[in-house]
Length: 192
Image (cartoon, rainbow, N blue to C red; front, side, top):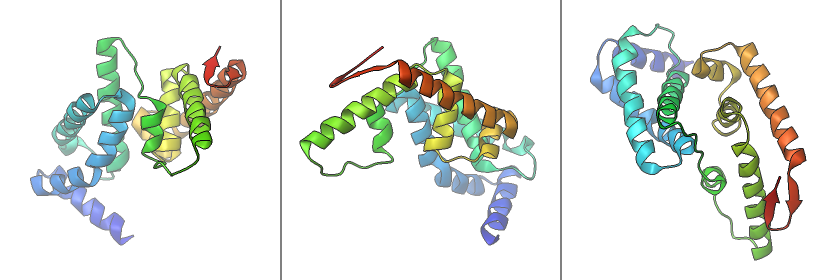
């Protein structure tokens, strides 16, 4: 409870234009937002630029936000919009390789060469399937499963309702299962 009160006070100070308070928010969320943007864009230079753009937009909009602002979800929403705008501008949706994506959450453990091959094949297969999902479904899975956001936070990021998020996640998981069923599995390669 004390942390929530401290965060609310910090947000209130930042909303009033206190740059030092915003710097604390920036330092608290920068790494998470950068990693999220990097996963969406797959390029460290893009991630750096778009993360900076996210925080610039956040700073400019902060004074117009409500007093009960949930900063984390709000920043993810801004980052999502910045990335989607950039991807629309490029008319290209590119997701990073599954190896880079998974390595953030599961550091490489020393295993046998056989286990390494099996793990690599599984990561390639999952990435292959994710690449075929509707981008909105992919985004929901990313926010829920890999960023650990709650339904309410995802709803805030996507600008929708909690019920809509549950529905999107259900459809995303169902589409994942359908694509998974159509993939022909052979050692060392994934085929449709």
